[in-house]
Length: 324
Image (cartoon, rainbow, N blue to C red):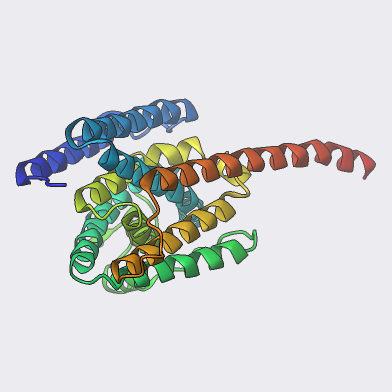
């Protein structure tokens, strides 16, 4: 897939425009809480834009590349839903005012998008030069899937990473918030507000999530342009998805198991691809249509199973409380 420099430039300009609209149009009244209704509307808009982009890939580059893009987008979107659990913990940990949550999430995602772009560039260069990188990516995904599958359902805890600890150490931070302002003057010097700390926390935490998601999408496509755009569109709608799924996320009890299966599947696919490249002709190449079917089918199954399990639990609770 050949992508000219002007297409890259137009894509980046388009993404910057979307970010500007999100910050200055969607969130123009930052004193107003972001309701579930607003979140649902803008989530549909973002998903629609992502789908239109995929159809554009289909029109200009063919169905194979379009399927790779959609597979990558669905995978990144599903992984981002799991990430929302941690985002919720971070916002609660720092007691972020609800009317400031949209701004802090959007800023953190912009940080993550820039850093992920660097990760993707490095990963694409490594894959282009060294086939054995597929073994590393595949093994890492299988190991991550195993850990995710064994993970027990416990309340998530947020632990400050090294970057956040360093930031707190070298940058003066005031105790309380100042609306949506990130920097204020206090005691004759400039200091940052806790809002800036939360942005760093979300941005750096999302980069840690990229250690799973970037190898996963490289298992579906090795085209840097598709990897980057699938990541970008998955992240762009993450703010609205946060407010939309704020109440629903806790009900997706089997999501972690489903993501573990998806990561394990892609990990095995990467290992098989590497073996095939090294001359092991018995190792099958998993077609993109099968990958997309497995991803979508798994997400549909775990969503239905989670909602059914939650409904049964809700039905039992009144009976148990009545017996008590």
